[in-house]
Length: 381
Ligand code: ACO
Image 1 (cartoon, protein in one colour):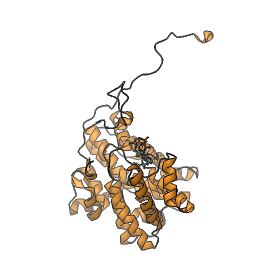
Image 2 (cartoon, helix red, strand yellow):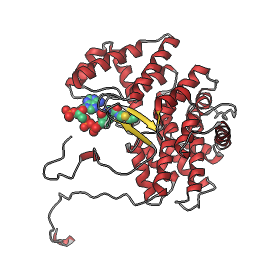
Image 3 (cartoon, rainbow, N blue to C red):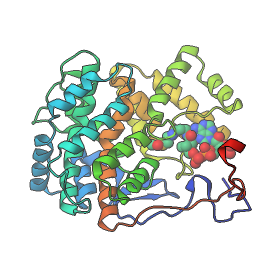
Image 4 (spheres, helix red, strand yellow):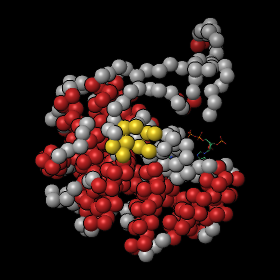
């Protein structure tokens, strides 16, 4: 989108504006590649568990075996949800979206954190808070879901990692090795992505010297929207509508002709593709083959071909994640909350980076309202 000529310095949606410096991740647009602290995200998704990525993002380097074992133990020790939060989740209206429940839960958890009164710029306190935030996310998503279903929450198994525990505490059955690997990869791919809308919102929040929990609540609220993380849920509802209608090609052509936004396609940064989507698409098709249901992958392929041929638009990571999660039997309203489980790592890494070298984030705007005019007293209006 080009800036209006009257304001050459203005870029709508801040497109292309450099809003900060980071050492956390890099998007290379020409190659559509993504690295976390210099390591290709595909290598991490292929060879590492999610906790290794979490450690890398928060601590700045990959853990060795001892560091990873200690980190996993810390995550496990910090994963329990305090009873007042469980009680509050029980009071939530049944129709309340899990993302809104997460905002509520993290607001409460902030006040229960032993570092609640800590200096907001204390690096050590912020790392401790970050670990507690990350540790509780999967358990919170699962507990909120089970409570909504009238079931008792399940305690995470200390022998399992975050990915396996997410599935276990959600469904009540321990996942097999393949499902655990898919979740580890999915969480890794969703963990971090530069100055995306929610991460930027987190940074704006803490730059006022607010706190990490307030930043996470800000991030969750921002991720919820369908132009951002909420697209994975919307993409699945769309795929179900297409499936019901029975003609993916016609649906896609009609949607484009009516200028409909097709969820799970397009990206602000990438130009030719999102490598995370390619990776998830491969996994989604593999899950489809294992469970004997390849038709979601077929619908997806038809849409992807038409979107590229007609509009040069490609799927982003939310598109294949949607049908991959569906095939894993995950309820649709939990798709964006699972994104939160992953992205708490990137959000916290960015908020710590922001606070380690802080300056208030306060851009400016162009005023186009009425010229200065006289105040008219109430009785004369
Ligand atoms: N379906 C149809 N047309 C699209 C789509 C889409 N998904 N995405 C972009 N376009 C079209 C727009 O209509 C516009 O066309 P025009 O120039 O003829 O008006 C052009 O491409 C540019 O689109 P913008 O919306 O201006 O691009 P922007 O960079 O602002 O938006 C965004 C990027 C929000 C991701 C957009 O592509 C979109 O809405 N996609 C669908 C929602 C989605 O999948 N969001 C998830 C993003 S990834 C993530 O958050 C993890």
